[in-house]
Amino acid sequence: MMEDLAVKKSKTIYWASGIVSICGIIFEVLFGALGSYILGDGVKQYTLTISLFLTGMGIGAYLSEKVMKNLILTFIWIEFGIALIGGFSSFTMFGITAFSPSGTDAFYLYFVTLLIGGLTGIELPILIRKANEIGEKLNRSTARVLFSDYAGGLIGGLLFVFLLRPQFGMVKSAFVVGCVNLAVAFTVLWLFRKEIKNFATHTTFGIIIAILLIAGVLFGEAMAFTFEQKLYKDPIVYMEQSAYQKIILTQDQGDTRLYLDGSLQFSSTDEYRYHEVLVHPTMAQAKSHGNVLILGGGDGIAAKEILQYDDVKSITLVDLDPAVTKLAKTNRQLVQLNEGSLHNNKVDIIHKDAFQYLKNTNTWYDVIFVDLPDPNNESLNKLYTKEFYSLIRNHLSPGGATMIQSTSPVFATKVYWTISKTIESTGLHTENLHVDVPSFGNWGFVMASRDEINIEDLSIGVETEFLTEDMLLSLTQFGKDEDRMISNEKGEKFTLKPNTLIDPNLIQLYEHAWKNY
Image (cartoon, rainbow, N blue to C red; front, top):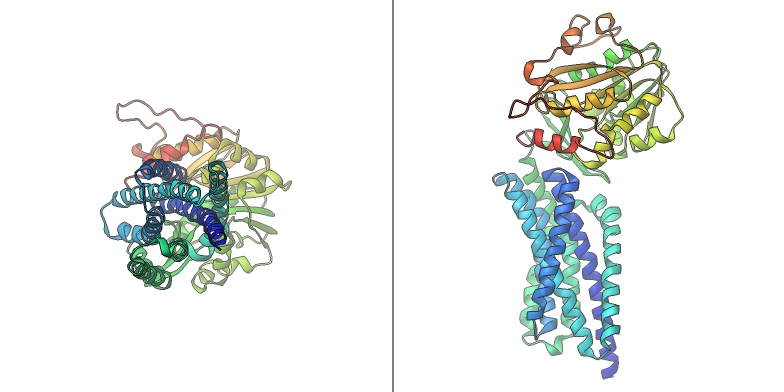
């Protein structure tokens, strides 16, 4: 009977090591996702959080040497701590972001990452030593506990990517994982209850933590919603965490705004300024309009402008996130704004990465519009490289034209002209345009074609709210502070070089340009 109990305790330790490893890796990638969403630059944030988490684990492993007795009770209280701190981590992060001075959120995220990493690092050595105490040989105990721990890491990563983040979001996911940590603590507490003094006291503390975590699961997301509302000017009317990004729709006094991962995509009060400049000069430059490609533009507004041209036979819209196009097809405000363009029989929607789509398709297009988010992370940066623009060139029909949104030449001057230089490096003829969009500020575009572009010869053949033929030339004029001949602090001219997959210089330029906005 005693031997059966020992075997049961030993198996529990192996299962516990696997489960806490699952929870640990979920918290690790969760903190990276939080940093990417709130602080920007996903590669930087994931690198920092993974490094800090592993450093914390190393510190924790070292500190575990100081634990000489009460191994199981120490493990239980560490699990209590991880459950409470980790469970409330996302909730607290949104609260700090909404109400605290700039920089506090980053400090908190890095601190809690190091702390959870440290607590996780203490656990594994304790479990190994406890397994040895039960009576198994050292090499067998260590190997089994390590196997459970490492295998749990893979499971945790898969669960976060395919279940927790898309189904529960970042706030509820943290509370759910905290509950799992707490369940492990209760299981171990009950199984080893005869070894633990003041069993009822420890159980009571665990129950209090359980109540807090369950309340967090039930009500935490709603409260965090009020925190997040502080980050936006207008009331949030729709919020969704898709498999790729956080989608937020706000509305106030007739102004509907779409945000993706916190970045404004459009305001209904002035979107026509942006989309008319994106679409109509390009359509005027192209010799024919039969086959049109939109990369991005999942809101359907660019498609609405394009559908004004009777000679358009087909529009292929390639947007990575099906949640965005679904919202644009079903949300009353968006359908009214895009005039139901995504329901038009001429529009074919493909949910795929734009780079991969161009790489694999054999179709040529008369007009290509690139309406993608700014290059603020590695995955978006590849869509602003010479390699990507070369693919666009290779799919552009003779006499065709393309227009590429290229961020603000005022706020991110070096970024804008680097994008322009990158497009030029593919051999296409280019023309630079910019327009004042009140909700965005001054915004830039690069038009490119296999043929030379003479902006004075272009004519707009459809009805517009803002754009006229007379103002086209004025859109190509840039002030001294937004011209490509820009200087650094020492007065030295900035050397433009193309952005490539091998040398992604655009990300750092972008991060530096927008850090004060």
